[in-house]
Image (tube, rainbow, N blue to C red):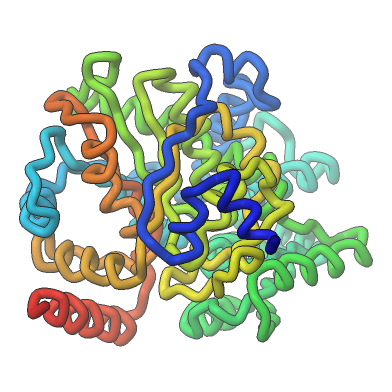
Length: 439
């Protein structure tokens, strides 16, 4: 009996994954939030510490990155209802969504234009703070804007930061690290977009390309750091600092929803759909949301049908001990940030008790969503940002309609995509959508 025949016998839904069908998997092992949080490796205090560090660095961000001055160095994105897209999706799925559809625009976060501006930038500033305080160049009570100086850039030039990435994490880490003065090496997998590599090189970042996928790029980054005591490797698969940087989003979102008068409680549930690659970003955000809203929030990972690594790991409880290639999938998708064949075991194990489920989406659907969203709302997002868009309709079909629910699609990237690439994406999206309409 083949490996995946055995798995299909034990977990029949895996046959749908093998056949690249869009699925919604509901996690039957989800625990009450209070129980799950009581046994979690990380705590609310850890997230509060991360938020405080971001606040300390706000004067630096405001000085070094003009786009953050209006927000006083606060790196955050807006949340908004998307009623025109909801109407378009009602027609697309031929069903009326009862709840309200909203979007969290991490696609337009300042500095690096994706959700990675949360975790990636946070881990770099934590490392920066440690080095600066230990050297005596920075005192805890000083204004951190002094980090934007030749003195500090010269100091940080003695240190290296390395990361393996499919694209957006490399962008966020490369941009902030180079600005601070670090030598930066980004190990990029074959599926990373060329414009991202070129932008990093323009910022003075060393980009090393691999013909293989994300896992090899990460492995090479680890090897580089192991041989250099002054090199800090940012490990997308296992980093608690990355995770905590993302988790701060829960505190921030709670405040934003309160400002907008959006209620989240047992009678007004919040369903959140998070595009997922290796899992650090969506896992950290989901953890933060659980701290903020408890059982009133329901979190779902959303992945391409070719790369459902987290879905596969959670279903089987094998986590990073199984890859999508083990069930015959090719891990090839236009959603480059989500093109990951093996999920983070750290995130899978931490988040299994918290997650409501996972969903998968085809590249064709991603492009349909891109076209519809651009037509309806006039906003461009990259393909991976739409992974969670079908979620509300799948969840209502399974859980029943709830007129008081808010369905929040987390848009993860797209703000920095160059205009020629945007046009190319939109033309492809329009063509695929037109072909689908003719069927």
